[in-house]
Amino acid sequence: AQRVTQPEKLLSVFKGAPVELKCNYSYSGSPELFWYVQYSRQRLQLLLRHISRESIKGFTADLNKGETSFHLKKPFAQEEDSAMYYCVTFGNEKLTFGTGTRLTIIP
Amino acid sequence: NAGVTQTPKFQVLKTGQSMTLQCAQDMNHNSMYWYRQDPGMGLRLIYYSASEGTTDKGEVPNGYNVSRLNKREFSLRLESAAPSQTSVYFCASSDLSYLSLHFGNGTRLTVT
Image (cartoon, rainbow over the protein chains, first blue to last red):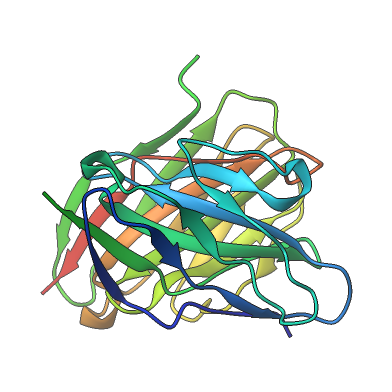
């Protein structure tokens, strides 16, 4: 069975400081992994996916198969990064969401 | 191009009442999903439909039924609402590659 673990429910970071949102997964096979974000009063939206190896809004995430992790990182936090972040895996035609991390950027 | 549209946005029900949440997408996506979002639980899959005419149970299907009316529409029905079903419900759709999941704005349901 797929499982996604986001160990931090809440994370507060000062503006300009580095951000790391942790995500670990368990899946037998080659997973597809995503980060979704929900800003205040907006709908959930895709932030980035591991296969594209892209950087969106300064965020990157590297798939580490050895550690089964897909941590989301940004070198310098901005106030507009405050949001709810979900790590997501895809397999067996289903998406599995982590429990989410609420990131608050302190001005 | 509206994307994924959910109705209603808010609903209050009494225990035992029934209601249907409507969802429609205009992106010609094959797959559609219903999730519920609860504090500390993240998003949990209730039901999904990989294609028109098929539906499958997700993680928390008890107390719900779904209908994939056509390719565009996927409705979620609560036959006898319970306070444990108080939640925010999200409909979503995705294309065949599952690389693009589009969400609706959500329905906030309160069961008293």
